[in-house]
Length: 434
Image (spheres, rainbow, N blue to C red):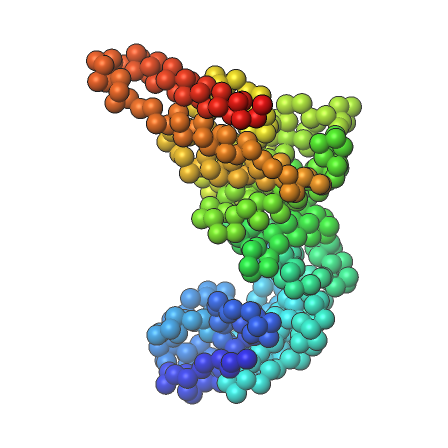
């Protein structure tokens, strides 16, 4: 394991340690993306005199004038208000490394490394790292509600390494969830943690569904996203959903979306759409269970609601709305008339947004595969819909302008030609499938 690089004429007079996630990931032999440095025995004036740029208002955090990496003064904190910002900070030269590490969330994040590569580990972080346990450092853990989301995110990121959450830590997370403190978190901060978790997966061994499973388990999801949490109480027809539970199904859909989008540029949006596709089932009256007739359109206001609440990017919301409304149409593609397909293509705006249509197909395919025993089943609807859309998209206004048509006549001509193109594709598939 390589040692951290502290060599700099600017920092030569400072006692600097590599801390937090960088140390954790080095010990896991995992690629280190960001390095955070801790400065012991210094004050704000000394940092500024060396050319560091102060960026933290509540906390003494600085940017190195050359590398732009973050350097923070050792500090202690005291809870004074609600939420993750309700702390007073003490950052004077007499704060020790042990005191600074004590305020951190998990033992595996409460380690430091010297320039010589020596590990400073006062709270047995290496043991928990080897035992694959996510454990809080102290009872002060409950003072910061953001830690509920952070621990869930770490559980998702390191799930492939075999990490689990310590029982007592999960109890504290549940206590925070029931305390009302989660309501003090900003929409931007909640969404940042969700988005970072949704971005995990693939070669990095992350499992985004674990993030939401943990939030549901510690009762945080009912506060942060109650419409999603409600799905764990809703059954599905066993014929189509051997897993039965709508919440379990949604997690399986997210798993499939992760597998299908490892290197996809819009993977986070597709995965968010996967989470939203069945929200309408939470509104079905119990008397109608396990049937969920009309759940597609019923879910649209819920997608709008969570997108507004968490300030989700508009492009994510638009894709999620389309998947929510049309995922069953995608599954039933071979049964639909060409005219119905054309109508759906128009509603999906595939002519102007072909990339979004591909994303839509991936999310719908994830829904189909995300069922117990369906994981390896073929999904021929994918290629059929792509072929039909491609054939129809080749029809444009140029041909009709050349015929001297204008206005509504062009629009009608395009629609008629596109319908014919879709019909030909359907006939070809019917012959092949017979």
